[in-house]
Length: 138
Image (cartoon, rainbow, N blue to C red; front, side):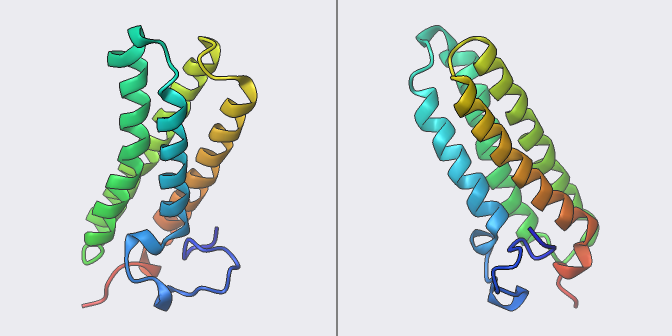
């Protein structure tokens, strides 16, 4: 993913009207929905711990990205929210590792989801390292 969150897909910044147009957001949303579906099969005793934690952190990536998008007038606030996204994505990876080690998630599914979050993290870091591409000039 390039600085614009779209890699080489031919969509420049001008075609991005909301956070939902960002490839990194779409990827994070899709991954969060996969986690939701998979976590339905987690044991009932995990409902208030691992299940809630992994759902919360995966969804928080998307929610924080939406908040970051709305704070683009202020570079520091924008980057701070993107840092929150990055932290939530990394937390989700930790919960994925727990889910695999506890045998709630098979290794291949765990690797696939972990890899998706590596891609999300790459997109977020690109945005964090290049905020001027995104900040609204007043």
